[in-house]
View (cartoon, rainbow, N blue to C red):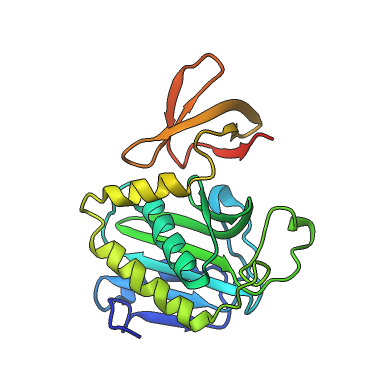
Amino acid sequence: MEKTSFTNNLIKLDCVDSTNEEAFRRAKDIKDYRLAVSSLSQSAGRGRLGRQFLSEESKGIFLSVLENEILNPQITARAAVCVCKVLEEASGISLKIKWPNDIVVDGKKLCGILTEMRNSNVVIGIGINLYNEDFGELTDIATSLRLCGYEADREDLLTRLLIALDNMLDSYEKSKPGDLDYYKVHSCVLDKDIYLISGDEKNPAKAVGLSEDFELIVSDDNNHLRTISSGEVSLRLRT
């Protein structure tokens, strides 16, 4: 593996409750300022808004990277750009980003990203479906690289991700308009009719743009504009 900040701070496990939780637990053991935790499976993997994330043994990449500095609000979206680039370059598959942080293929979720902060530690959790062949009741909304026709080398892909994430974290304080442009081009949400979902409320809107901080700009039925951050709501495309 190319030398990175994770070279001496990469923990590989067979099973863990959550790689995000394990990264937070091990924060005090950081030799430098970054830590990565990878596991073959998770017993309690989770996504945004407390949702469960399917983490079958040896079927995916379940990775969390921890940075012990406070990062800016763009970090989740920039992580999505970073992961999308790695997956596209490795697989040759055309991917899209569903705001704020899902990587999708033809509308089906391939990868989820969850960013959490505690004290001064920020953890970026990444779950990628590699070898799943049957998603059961989730078949209509989930997919894997194998189902997309690409047989991934798990260790090679993990290495690529760590190198790319390390480079991204090294430069996160610098303005990178290219990331915003990439995100817009790869968005499956912009210029689409959507529902904004918060609790039991489901409000129709149209996604019309992104702010410089990757916040979603939406227009309601009265053409009133509103800017929303990733922690406020979830969204669903209207069909």
